Structures are given as C-alpha cells and as structure tokens.
Length: 92
Image (cartoon, rainbow, N blue to C red):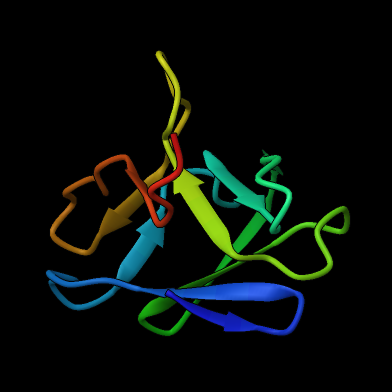
C-alpha cells in the first residue's frame, strides 16, 4: 500500500501475469481517512497495481477489499484466481 495524494496504490504478490476484473470495473473496495470512516471507493487496475480513491476521502490512509459478510468482489489474477478479502488497517 502506498498513499498517493487523494488515492492509495495497492501492489500484489502472485499476479500470474497481471490483474483483471470480471465485469465492468472493480467492485468491493472501501477507503478511509484518519477519521476511520470507510466509504465505497472507485478502483482501477493500472499495470500490476490497483489505484483506489473516493471523492469523500481527501487524504486516504486505509483500504479494505471484500470486507463484508457476502462481498461482491471481482479482482482476479491472470491465472483466474480471485484476490482474497484483505484490509490495510489494524483498527478495532
């Protein structure tokens, strides 16, 4: 995870040649600032990374993916394996 202004860039291991989304655009991403309030985020694949942002979060500090009971997620690697739910924060 690397903050970049109003966005956070995520890097992944085990790409198997790259990242893909199943469907029109990535789903399942949330982002938060220092207030620890997560909001749904926009996410785009850029090369071997994912850039996550939301207009409501000016200075993001954390991202969560698939962090729900029944998440709608569609990030995969090129070996057709799904990304596991994760979080970059350790808040209670």
